[in-house]
Length: 302
Ligand code: TA6
Image 1: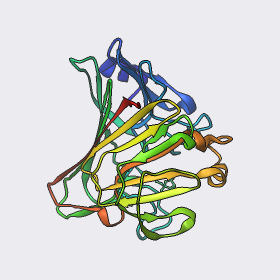
Image 2: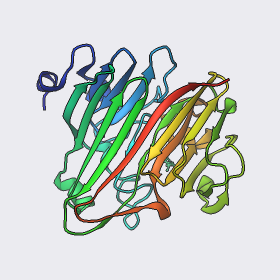
Image 3: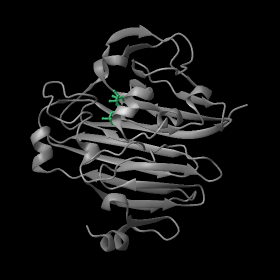
């Protein structure tokens, strides 16, 4: 749909407009009395979210590349319909294809409390069907206000069950990785993938990051809280429909290799991802619908 048609059908004065963004990617720009956000239609990829009076909560790299078919470094990439490498075909994209294909706007609304609601649907093509031969409908809903609510909905419209892996691979803006502790995963088992390992370990205390961290915490539905002593705030991640939480910081060497973090860029971010991965992947029966929902909010840190 052309920009003019998008604005004609879905723009909301003082809330939502569609613009041609970096790399020619069409962006939904949201600005209301509570917060601002930007969402690329490619990947239905929320790139930024900043509550009024706060530093940005969702981080995006200043060196992110914006191009057709390429994932953007930061924001809330949608990992779907698998998390990490494909189980059997290494030629298929890591974290699935949902974050690099086009989605369409299905609905937009101004909510009574002044928040903005927008819903997207993934556009199936021969290319997506070639990677994922299971008939299904996948949509994502954003409610952008004082908090940010994201809900990823997968409906199996075929006649066979399929196995689903997924994540809202959210990047968070922090003052500095040395000023941060992640709470909520104490006592959880995790698969430690740092340095290419695959070791099962148990989390003892809050998570402090002083090197590459790449961990899939298993069988946990708990909230996580990112305590940021530098910004004197805490970011709460309250999830439903997710049994894994992934914590990732590439640290210097890996970030430099990736080339889109920028100098020391990894120090200002951490990923806490609400997922269903490894032993927590799901079987979605014919006719069933699976919901993965997360609410991100900011609290004072005393
Ligand atoms: O969620 C952590 C992770 O799986 C890391 O292993 C790293 O690959 C990261 O995702 C980013 O992946 P990307 O494909 O976005 O560069």
